[in-house]
Length: 61
Image (cartoon, rainbow, N blue to C red; front, side, top):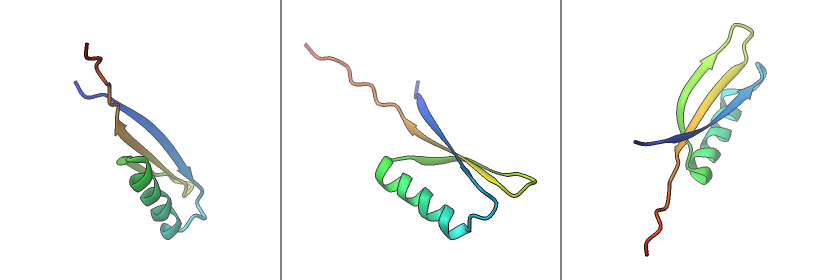
């Protein structure tokens, strides 16, 4: 069974698409996060859920 850890990012309504894309790109490249869900709310703020696999190392010996 694959387990994921999640990170939720919230952007204010005055954040441009370019700014949001840059932040998400940095998380994807350097933190190995992938986009799980995006939500745009009535007030204009945006909430983004990122996820990445939890890697469990099994002991050998």
